[in-house]
Amino acid sequence: MVRLPELEHSSHPEHVLKWINGVETPYKCDGCKQEGFHPCYQCIENGCDFHLHEQCAAVDRLSYITHPFFGNTWSIGLCVACGKGVQGFRYQSYCNKAHVIHPCCLKLPPALSAPQGDQAVNLELHKKAKCWPTSKSCLRCQNRKISKGIHGWVYVSTNDDFCYHVACVQDLILDKWRTDQLQSPNGDPGRQTIQLAIEIVSYLQGRFARCTWG
Image 1 (cartoon, rainbow, N blue to C red):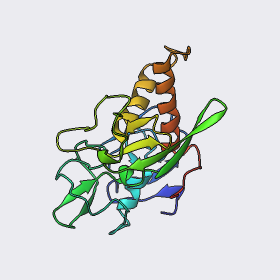
Image 2 (cartoon, rainbow, N blue to C red; image 1 turned 90 degrees about the vertical axis):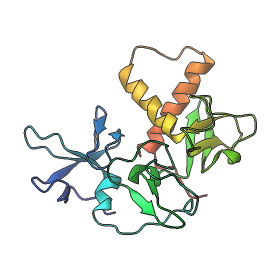
Image 3 (cartoon, rainbow, N blue to C red; image 1 turned 180 degrees about the vertical axis):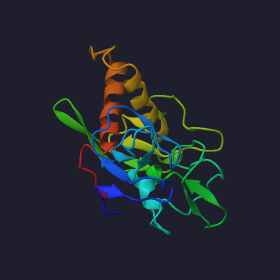
Image 4 (cartoon, rainbow, N blue to C red; image 1 turned 45 degrees about the vertical axis):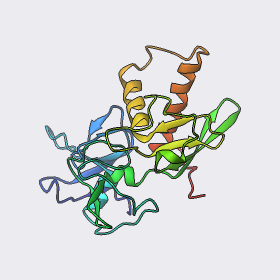
């Protein structure tokens, strides 16, 4: 999608939406109905609190999109990537039976490099739990499945030390917004793990450009 400074969208025909690069607080996307942390399209008319993820703005223009993880059996009504309910904009596949995914989840970077001290932790996106090391669970929720019947996509470090559900990474950044400046890293391994997750989310927000299909 070509990023436009202003956008007319069928979901909000009343006003023109403007691209807002600096988002200071989370918002609810009026397209997919999920909370957002990314730069977005926003209505700046007085009294109008309309926001739209960049990925959701593209839904108005695109009829079809491909992804290397397509072709699995996904549950109707729950996003295969994050396991959360799909209430708004979605992509839907008809490979064997209908299955859905949030627009933002469909655009998750397939590989990330998150700084950790003087080194970097490289993470790869996996589509199901059997890709995880046998001894590992998500470091946040301590589970392999994110919800009933949904394993959820995960980011796994190439050294197998870190595993995070996509949904848990999203929840971690929300926790950070709610407790900002209330705690600070103090060498505690658990706290350092949270800080790593926040760095991962920074990549998901597009603040860092180092992501490839490698």
